[in-house]
Figure 1: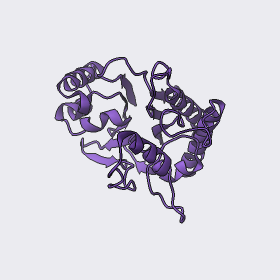
Figure 2: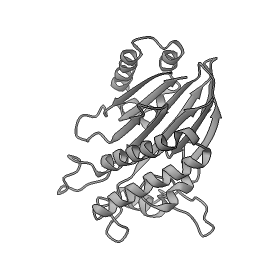
Figure 3: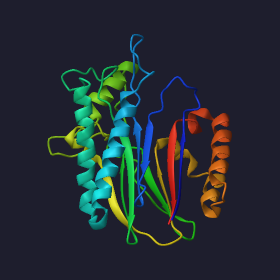
Figure 4: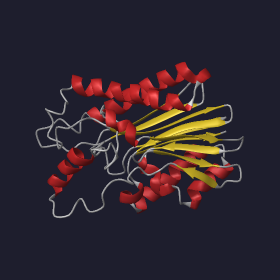
Length: 274
Protein backbone atom coordinates (compact mmCIF):
# COMPACT_ATOMS: atom_id res chain seq x y z
CA UNK A 1 0.00 0.00 0.00
CA UNK A 2 1.45 3.34 -1.11
CA UNK A 3 0.50 6.51 0.72
CA UNK A 4 1.43 10.15 0.85
CA UNK A 5 0.16 13.20 2.69
CA UNK A 6 -0.06 16.80 1.57
CA UNK A 7 -1.00 19.88 3.58
CA UNK A 8 -1.05 23.40 2.18
CA UNK A 9 -1.67 26.68 3.95
CA UNK A 10 -4.02 29.27 2.53
CA UNK A 11 -2.85 31.23 -0.51
CA UNK A 12 -4.02 34.39 1.25
CA UNK A 13 -0.82 34.66 3.27
CA UNK A 14 0.18 33.90 6.85
CA UNK A 15 -2.43 36.01 8.61
CA UNK A 16 -4.13 32.79 9.71
CA UNK A 17 -2.58 29.92 11.65
CA UNK A 18 -2.65 26.44 10.15
CA UNK A 19 -5.89 24.83 11.34
CA UNK A 20 -5.83 21.54 9.42
CA UNK A 21 -4.37 18.47 11.10
CA UNK A 22 -3.95 14.83 10.11
CA UNK A 23 -2.55 11.58 11.49
CA UNK A 24 -1.41 8.50 9.58
CA UNK A 25 -0.92 5.37 11.64
CA UNK A 26 2.58 3.92 11.72
CA UNK A 27 1.13 0.46 12.46
CA UNK A 28 -1.95 0.04 10.29
CA UNK A 29 -3.70 1.53 7.24
CA UNK A 30 -5.64 4.10 9.25
CA UNK A 31 -5.96 7.75 8.26
CA UNK A 32 -7.76 10.70 9.85
CA UNK A 33 -7.93 14.38 8.92
CA UNK A 34 -9.61 17.34 10.60
CA UNK A 35 -10.13 20.96 9.64
CA UNK A 36 -10.40 23.39 12.54
CA UNK A 37 -13.24 25.84 11.88
CA UNK A 38 -11.88 29.39 11.76
CA UNK A 39 -13.40 31.77 14.28
CA UNK A 40 -14.41 35.35 13.90
CA UNK A 41 -12.49 37.78 16.05
CA UNK A 42 -12.48 41.36 17.23
CA UNK A 43 -9.52 43.73 17.31
CA UNK A 44 -8.69 42.90 20.93
CA UNK A 45 -8.45 39.15 20.35
CA UNK A 46 -5.13 37.26 20.15
CA UNK A 47 -6.65 35.22 17.32
CA UNK A 48 -5.48 34.51 14.66
CA UNK A 49 -2.00 34.31 16.18
CA UNK A 50 -3.15 31.21 18.07
CA UNK A 51 -6.08 29.00 17.15
CA UNK A 52 -8.15 26.95 19.57
CA UNK A 53 -9.82 25.35 16.55
CA UNK A 54 -6.43 24.06 15.40
CA UNK A 55 -5.87 22.51 18.83
CA UNK A 56 -9.33 20.92 18.73
CA UNK A 57 -8.51 19.36 15.35
CA UNK A 58 -5.22 18.01 16.71
CA UNK A 59 -6.80 16.59 19.87
CA UNK A 60 -9.53 14.90 17.88
CA UNK A 61 -7.20 13.28 15.34
CA UNK A 62 -4.79 11.98 17.95
CA UNK A 63 -7.42 10.39 20.21
CA UNK A 64 -9.27 8.89 17.25
CA UNK A 65 -6.06 7.30 15.98
CA UNK A 66 -5.22 5.96 19.44
CA UNK A 67 -8.63 4.30 19.73
CA UNK A 68 -8.67 2.99 16.15
CA UNK A 69 -5.28 1.33 16.54
CA UNK A 70 -6.41 -0.40 19.74
CA UNK A 71 -9.46 -1.82 17.95
CA UNK A 72 -7.91 -2.62 14.57
CA UNK A 73 -7.79 -6.42 14.82
CA UNK A 74 -11.51 -6.66 15.61
CA UNK A 75 -12.72 -3.47 13.93
CA UNK A 76 -16.37 -3.34 12.83
CA UNK A 77 -18.74 -0.67 11.56
CA UNK A 78 -19.93 -0.08 15.13
CA UNK A 79 -16.45 1.09 16.10
CA UNK A 80 -16.76 4.07 13.73
CA UNK A 81 -19.44 5.67 15.90
CA UNK A 82 -17.77 4.69 19.14
CA UNK A 83 -14.37 6.19 18.36
CA UNK A 84 -16.00 9.31 16.93
CA UNK A 85 -17.84 9.76 20.23
CA UNK A 86 -14.58 9.40 22.15
CA UNK A 87 -12.87 12.02 19.97
CA UNK A 88 -15.84 14.36 20.17
CA UNK A 89 -15.88 14.06 23.96
CA UNK A 90 -12.17 14.94 24.06
CA UNK A 91 -12.99 18.17 22.20
CA UNK A 92 -15.80 18.82 24.69
CA UNK A 93 -13.29 18.59 27.55
CA UNK A 94 -10.93 20.92 25.70
CA UNK A 95 -13.68 23.50 25.15
CA UNK A 96 -14.65 23.33 28.83
CA UNK A 97 -11.01 23.78 29.86
CA UNK A 98 -10.95 26.96 27.76
CA UNK A 99 -14.17 28.28 29.27
CA UNK A 100 -16.06 27.62 26.03
CA UNK A 101 -19.45 26.43 27.24
CA UNK A 102 -22.96 27.16 25.97
CA UNK A 103 -23.60 29.73 28.71
CA UNK A 104 -20.30 31.54 28.09
CA UNK A 105 -20.20 31.95 24.30
CA UNK A 106 -21.71 34.57 22.01
CA UNK A 107 -21.54 32.45 18.81
CA UNK A 108 -19.31 35.03 17.16
CA UNK A 109 -15.84 35.93 18.44
CA UNK A 110 -16.28 33.81 21.59
CA UNK A 111 -17.51 30.46 20.38
CA UNK A 112 -16.95 26.72 20.62
CA UNK A 113 -13.76 25.38 19.06
CA UNK A 114 -14.76 22.89 16.38
CA UNK A 115 -13.60 20.92 13.35
CA UNK A 116 -14.79 18.93 10.36
CA UNK A 117 -13.31 15.48 9.82
CA UNK A 118 -12.84 12.47 7.55
CA UNK A 119 -11.55 9.00 8.44
CA UNK A 120 -10.51 5.80 6.65
CA UNK A 121 -9.43 2.38 7.90
CA UNK A 122 -8.61 -0.42 5.45
CA UNK A 123 -8.77 -4.02 6.62
CA UNK A 124 -9.47 -7.34 4.91
CA UNK A 125 -10.64 -5.88 1.62
CA UNK A 126 -12.97 -3.43 3.30
CA UNK A 127 -12.66 0.31 3.86
CA UNK A 128 -14.37 1.75 6.94
CA UNK A 129 -14.99 5.47 6.51
CA UNK A 130 -16.68 8.52 7.92
CA UNK A 131 -17.13 12.13 6.86
CA UNK A 132 -18.49 15.13 8.69
CA UNK A 133 -19.48 18.37 7.01
CA UNK A 134 -17.15 19.27 4.13
CA UNK A 135 -14.20 17.01 4.88
CA UNK A 136 -14.56 13.76 2.98
CA UNK A 137 -13.46 10.51 1.39
CA UNK A 138 -13.22 9.81 -2.36
CA UNK A 139 -12.58 6.36 -3.84
CA UNK A 140 -11.40 5.50 -7.37
CA UNK A 141 -11.50 1.90 -8.57
CA UNK A 142 -8.75 0.03 -10.43
CA UNK A 143 -10.20 1.29 -13.73
CA UNK A 144 -9.54 4.87 -12.54
CA UNK A 145 -13.26 5.63 -12.28
CA UNK A 146 -14.61 7.49 -9.28
CA UNK A 147 -16.89 4.99 -7.58
CA UNK A 148 -17.60 6.80 -4.33
CA UNK A 149 -17.62 10.26 -2.84
CA UNK A 150 -18.84 10.93 0.69
CA UNK A 151 -21.85 13.25 1.12
CA UNK A 152 -21.13 16.98 1.20
CA UNK A 153 -22.80 17.37 4.59
CA UNK A 154 -25.05 20.33 3.81
CA UNK A 155 -28.16 18.46 2.69
CA UNK A 156 -30.27 19.50 5.70
CA UNK A 157 -29.02 23.08 5.89
CA UNK A 158 -31.86 25.47 4.85
CA UNK A 159 -31.23 27.39 1.65
CA UNK A 160 -33.07 30.59 2.54
CA UNK A 161 -31.68 31.16 6.02
CA UNK A 162 -29.54 34.20 5.05
CA UNK A 163 -32.39 36.37 3.88
CA UNK A 164 -32.57 39.86 5.39
CA UNK A 165 -29.61 39.41 7.77
CA UNK A 166 -26.43 41.43 8.29
CA UNK A 167 -23.01 39.76 8.07
CA UNK A 168 -22.46 39.41 11.82
CA UNK A 169 -26.03 38.27 12.43
CA UNK A 170 -25.66 35.59 9.72
CA UNK A 171 -22.70 34.09 11.52
CA UNK A 172 -24.38 34.14 14.92
CA UNK A 173 -27.59 32.60 13.58
CA UNK A 174 -25.71 29.92 11.64
CA UNK A 175 -23.76 28.84 14.70
CA UNK A 176 -26.54 29.23 17.27
CA UNK A 177 -29.46 27.80 15.31
CA UNK A 178 -27.97 25.33 12.84
CA UNK A 179 -24.70 23.89 14.16
CA UNK A 180 -25.37 20.29 15.21
CA UNK A 181 -29.04 21.27 15.42
CA UNK A 182 -31.88 18.77 15.67
CA UNK A 183 -35.63 19.33 15.80
CA UNK A 184 -38.14 18.01 18.32
CA UNK A 185 -38.19 14.66 16.48
CA UNK A 186 -34.41 14.33 16.67
CA UNK A 187 -33.98 15.01 12.96
CA UNK A 188 -31.08 17.01 11.50
CA UNK A 189 -31.92 20.59 10.56
CA UNK A 190 -28.50 22.16 9.99
CA UNK A 191 -24.89 21.01 9.63
CA UNK A 192 -22.50 19.04 11.81
CA UNK A 193 -19.03 19.59 13.27
CA UNK A 194 -16.92 18.10 16.04
CA UNK A 195 -17.32 20.48 19.00
CA UNK A 196 -18.28 18.25 21.92
CA UNK A 197 -22.02 18.38 21.41
CA UNK A 198 -23.60 14.93 21.54
CA UNK A 199 -25.82 15.71 18.55
CA UNK A 200 -22.72 15.97 16.32
CA UNK A 201 -22.79 12.20 15.77
CA UNK A 202 -26.24 12.49 14.16
CA UNK A 203 -24.54 14.35 11.32
CA UNK A 204 -21.80 11.78 10.88
CA UNK A 205 -21.89 10.02 7.51
CA UNK A 206 -20.23 6.61 7.67
CA UNK A 207 -20.10 3.23 6.00
CA UNK A 208 -18.07 0.30 4.72
CA UNK A 209 -16.81 -0.11 1.14
CA UNK A 210 -15.35 -3.14 -0.61
CA UNK A 211 -11.90 -2.37 -2.01
CA UNK A 212 -9.36 -4.19 -4.18
CA UNK A 213 -5.73 -3.85 -5.16
CA UNK A 214 -5.30 -0.83 -7.40
CA UNK A 215 -8.06 1.25 -5.81
CA UNK A 216 -7.09 4.77 -4.76
CA UNK A 217 -8.64 6.51 -1.74
CA UNK A 218 -8.34 10.21 -0.97
CA UNK A 219 -9.07 11.50 2.53
CA UNK A 220 -9.31 15.27 2.45
CA UNK A 221 -10.41 18.55 3.99
CA UNK A 222 -12.61 20.99 2.08
CA UNK A 223 -9.83 22.94 0.34
CA UNK A 224 -9.51 20.10 -2.18
CA UNK A 225 -13.18 20.01 -3.20
CA UNK A 226 -12.65 21.92 -6.43
CA UNK A 227 -9.67 19.83 -7.53
CA UNK A 228 -11.49 16.53 -8.05
CA UNK A 229 -12.87 17.59 -11.42
CA UNK A 230 -9.46 18.68 -12.78
CA UNK A 231 -7.90 16.31 -15.30
CA UNK A 232 -4.35 17.21 -14.28
CA UNK A 233 -5.24 16.38 -10.68
CA UNK A 234 -6.94 13.06 -11.41
CA UNK A 235 -4.17 11.98 -13.79
CA UNK A 236 -1.65 12.06 -10.95
CA UNK A 237 -3.49 9.28 -9.16
CA UNK A 238 -3.94 7.24 -12.33
CA UNK A 239 -0.20 7.29 -13.08
CA UNK A 240 1.06 7.70 -9.49
CA UNK A 241 4.54 8.94 -10.57
CA UNK A 242 7.49 8.77 -8.18
CA UNK A 243 7.45 12.56 -7.83
CA UNK A 244 3.68 12.73 -7.29
CA UNK A 245 3.98 15.11 -4.33
CA UNK A 246 6.11 17.56 -6.33
CA UNK A 247 3.68 17.38 -9.23
CA UNK A 248 0.70 17.92 -6.91
CA UNK A 249 2.44 20.94 -5.40
CA UNK A 250 2.85 22.34 -8.90
CA UNK A 251 -0.86 21.85 -9.73
CA UNK A 252 -1.94 23.47 -6.47
CA UNK A 253 0.45 26.40 -6.89
CA UNK A 254 -0.67 27.16 -10.43
CA UNK A 255 -4.38 26.87 -9.68
CA UNK A 256 -4.06 28.92 -6.49
CA UNK A 257 -2.39 31.75 -8.41
CA UNK A 258 -5.08 31.73 -11.10
CA UNK A 259 -8.06 31.59 -8.72
CA UNK A 260 -7.14 31.92 -5.01
CA UNK A 261 -10.75 31.96 -3.78
CA UNK A 262 -11.55 28.67 -5.53
CA UNK A 263 -8.26 26.79 -5.24
CA UNK A 264 -6.19 28.65 -2.65
CA UNK A 265 -7.80 27.72 0.65
CA UNK A 266 -5.97 25.70 3.27
CA UNK A 267 -6.22 22.02 2.42
CA UNK A 268 -5.07 18.59 3.46
CA UNK A 269 -4.95 15.39 1.44
CA UNK A 270 -3.96 11.87 2.38
CA UNK A 271 -3.78 9.62 -0.69
CA UNK A 272 -3.72 5.83 -0.46
CA UNK A 273 -3.06 3.40 -3.32
CA UNK A 274 -4.36 0.03 -2.14
